[in-house]
Length: 178
Image 1: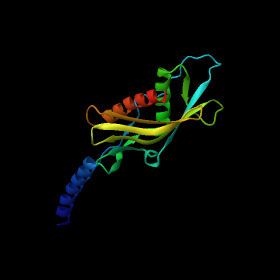
Image 2 (image 1 turned 135 degrees about the horizontal axis):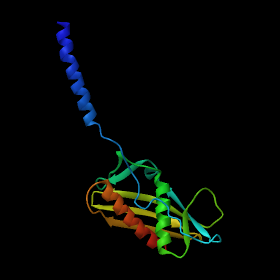
Image 3 (image 1 turned 180 degrees about the vertical axis):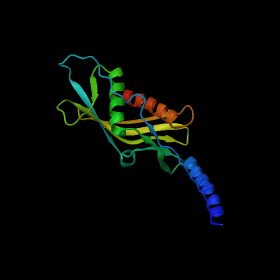
């Protein structure tokens, strides 16, 4: 009798283990499309402007953010940033500013004596409205403050489409900072 119960229990436990493994959601890591800094060939005497990024608390986590209705912003659990968002944003913004300006920008690496632009970002998210939003303000090297706000339509579904839309929004933010 014990052998019969054991023979029935083992296959059931194995089936439950397979079902549990199938139901777990794998974690996916993302990066912004333009988040690898590309240094321009510049003379050694070039004055660089450092790009710093300061994120609002909900953005300063590993989760992507998505606004699911008028009042709710959700942090993803299995769709995460592959590296700190502030680093990726600093590199992406520096790249975009370098393409649009005669000045030279680079992501900040610690305290430096060169001029700096600091971006304070309070929104960097997708939305149930089929668009992404980036909002904040920048302290420019001359000390002035400039607000920015970019809303970009999202083409397609999913987090990859959301990141492409956010990347386009960063192009708009760079134009607003010029």
